[in-house]
Image (tube, rainbow, N blue to C red; front, side, top):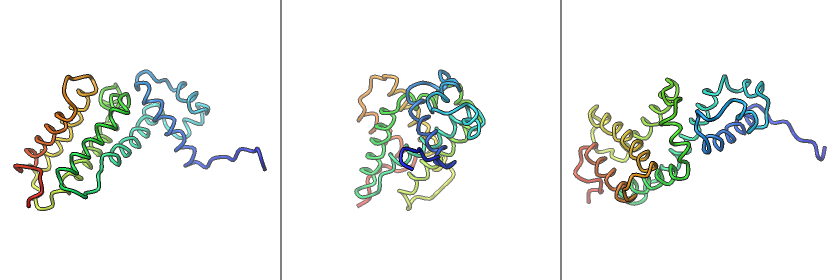
Length: 197
């Protein structure tokens, strides 16, 4: 019937709630947002919110999981040129994303919730996937435990460097990107990230 709103199915409703959460946590830190704020921003009752999420932490976790997937997709560049160009483009996309979403980035790495075990596990999984994407660009290199741990450590260094850059560290963005790439070469144990020709 014209003019009658259709009811969302459960998955569509949950996705719509996560969309609102992404916008909400992009503007305010986890610590500044109350469950009543979430209900008001999403236009649903607290009861309906609790139907989909156990509590604020569970809601935040679901929003962050989705945003980490978006970050991973944004910084994943299909190989087309040299490996160095691919990695450089990926880092540029990563820095673009965190520049466009600074509050979200700070929330996941610096707020009180960042110490929560579930958020820690979520970040560990995201970091492991980032490291795997990098290692996959170098199929000729042995997957030694040392190389894997070093690349995982590099991913954490990148997260910390991104935070410092957001906080206004007096560094040139391109210089920071290139220094991160130099450190990645060292983590991989290779003299250069350029393709061998």
